[in-house]
Length: 341
View 1 (cartoon, rainbow, N blue to C red):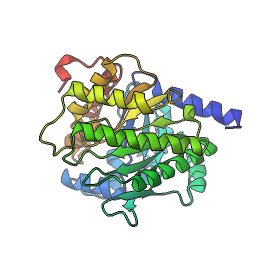
View 2 (cartoon, rainbow, N blue to C red):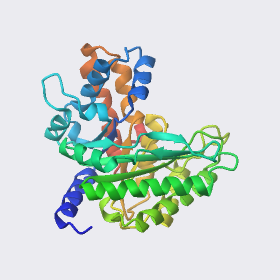
View 3 (spheres, rainbow, N blue to C red):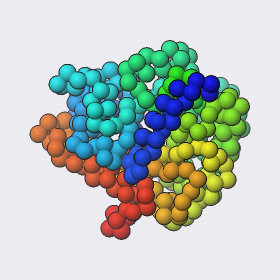
View 4 (cartoon, rainbow, N blue to C red):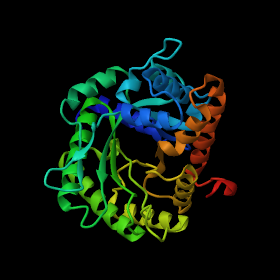
């Protein structure tokens, strides 16, 4: 990158996002996904309730002590709190950097049954400029890789890696830190060995594309899956095996120039995601800061406690903080033994 000032700003944002023991909260569910989760919790899926729920999360007292940034959805970054404060402004005042999801979701990949490609590159330069004006310091773009019979194909890995790199380059041009998220799904019956194989191949291609498209690795973050057994696999790998496979995989393919890896939870239970992160960090110093960028593994307990009733606000916020504190400890390998799944 030629703009020294922009590079310095990106580096400062990354320093903030990776400051131990904090991590990132992914509160970037689309309107459809968020509405579905509210319905399951018995909460009316209205715009007002979505706003109220996200306000509960973003205004938890002391959140900035364990959370360095929050990824928002387009609806949320435009939200105004009950007191009239713009949501990004309120987050920044609490020491939490506002971020934004900029992809528009995974769509069927042509001539590739069972596989997807993530869209959202059209008009991205202009959207990033608007989001930066609104206070966004970083962004996220998620690609989805499916494991199955004959899947993934090299074709699917390649087109998703190309899209991630194009997105990252545009972010850095706009002065926004890109979080690059290639997620190998854990929904199948595959073994941990197969997950490691696919994750290795995916990350290898992603970094080849990032370098080909002149993305500065020092000014981005990686948000990958952990290397785990598929949910339907009859033999589930131990916490220790997950940690060893994950670190082994990343040490082989993630350049040391990348400053940090912020894991997604991928549908793991809150407790198991924390236990895996803790075990990974217990393996000793790595070339990168290893932290979290969890969604459901942080917010599910809060939603269950809130259930749309403002009288439960403090209880819901404490449920969120319980999870962020546990993961802050796990991000430095100091999760209490009593909390390990």
